[in-house]
Structure formats: structure tokens, C-alpha cells
Image (cartoon, rainbow, N blue to C red; front, side, top):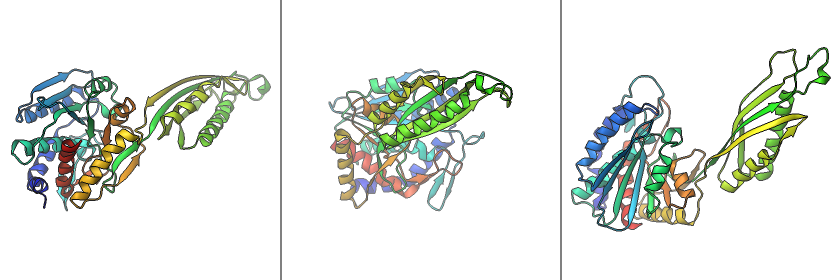
Length: 373
């Protein structure tokens, strides 16, 4: 067995102990005080590796914690993980280890990423691995709600990096996520005209029917564009069952693996101002860019696949409909490799788990990526 891989194999019991501790810390998205208590623990944990600098940036939803290591080297690699988790029950998270699996809210998405960072540094400080890169570790408090407060700070701290490594959950087959979908949000209000539906319906302008037709028109737009999905989401309207509806409303989204396609769809919707005599008012936003499989990201994946091949592991590529911080960074020109997390399943559910035996390879892969990029 490869010596570094063997080192991580011997750390499995300690890994289980650490990830169990991390999971038991309550850090549900939006719970600022709990997230900051968790960050206090992480700050103390990583201080053992004598960082060159530590910074905490306050936000309304929790701090952003940033460590710098080995700053004497020029090339910089970013290790990026979020610390917030999705609450699936009101109680504090618990841990169960059974049949080689570790169950716990946030274990798969994505506190194992934090543990991977810890053991990569431990391998350096115990002489199993030699790093000649500058490392910056960033812990994000609000990824699960779209990184509203942290997005700009993350980019500011990553824009000059050689690469950003993100241990978001891998795909079910262990694959790296090379593509993620862009998201376009929409809030559309239709203004019609009320009239009695029995006495003089012809004097009304039915906003409900106008909205129904608009939904079909958007369906046609995305069908012609291709590789775009449209979800009407929330639809409402009307005042009484015997009144022609004077208003209706739609809150929905479109998604695609292509940034250009999302932008074209939103522009076409924005260009519609009237339908069936009813007025259309649209609030549209390019909410989250796609992680596209461009040349800068392909290079990182090819390095990762070669590392896996050398130790007899398969590392397929895969796609995800969800978004991550990597999407925004890649859109702004930063090389990203996403989905480096430990195998598991059940993200955002009461049955979330990781496969413990996958830990040594994932820690090895992250270490060698740092070495070779």
C-alpha cells in the first residue's frame, strides 16, 4: 500500500471520533450563536497546527473563519467548506455508527470536509506528507442559504488561488461533481380586471387564465432552448369564486448546466409585458451561476483521476442539479474541483450517513491534489 494512504488508513478510528464530535455540534443554518460556538471549537482545533494567521469576519448569520498555513510558499490552494447544516429535526444532532456507516445530520453534507482538512494537516505535522504550497482554509457559515453574506468574502480570499478544493458530497458512485446547474429565480405578477363572473364576465380580464397561458409560454421557451428546466413552484390568484380574477402571481425557477441558456430564457421572459390583455410585471434574477466543465476545471479533474488510478480507485465524473460556492468561484474565473467529499447518502434528511472506509482514499486524494496542482 502507498505509504501516505496507509497513514490515513491508520487514522480511521480517530476520524470517526472527530467527525462524531463535529456532527454533535449544532450548527443549523441561520442559528448564528450555535454556528459561532462551533467555529470557536474549530478555531481551537486547527490552532494545534500553528497557522500563520487566523481571521474571523462577522456576518449576521455567523462568522467566516479563515486560516493561512505555509505562507512562505508562493502557490496558493484554497480548502473551502461550509459549517452550516440543514435542520431536519428540532433536537440536537446525534451520531450512530453501524455496519461501517456513520449516521448523523451534517455528516455527509459536509462536516466530513472539515475532518479531511484536519487530517491532511496532521499528515504534514507528523511527517507523512510534505506540502510546498500555501494553504488557506475557509469555513463558510451560510452556504445552505446561498452564501448571501459570505460569497464576496470567499471570492476576495480565493481569486488569486491556483485552485479551490471543495469537499461537497461526492456523487453516489464516488464521482467528482464537474457540472452544477445555474439557477434563475422569478417572481411574476399578473394584473387583470375584476368583474362579476355571472353578470358581466366579458368586462373582466382574467389574470388566472393569463398566468396559465404564461406558464405554457415559458414551457415553450425552455423547450426550444433545450437543457433548461422550469418549475412554476408557487401559483396563486383570485379574490372570490364568482369574480373574474384581477390578479395572480407566480414564484418559480429555471435551471440549466449552461449560464448562457439561463440568461437567454430570463431575457425572453423579461421581454413579455402583456398576455390576454393582462399586464405582466416580472422580477427576475440570475440567482446562481452554473459550474461549467471548462478547460480550467477539466485540468483539475484529470489530475484527480490520475491520482486515483495510481492507487487503484475509480473516480468518475458526474453532474448535480444543486448549487455550491464552487459555482460562483468558477464563474468568476477561479479553478474549482467540487464533490471531493466522502461517499455517503441522505443529505438534508434524518437518514444522512457516510461510508467510513472511504475516508483514507479521500484524505489521500486531497493531499495529492494539493501536491500536484
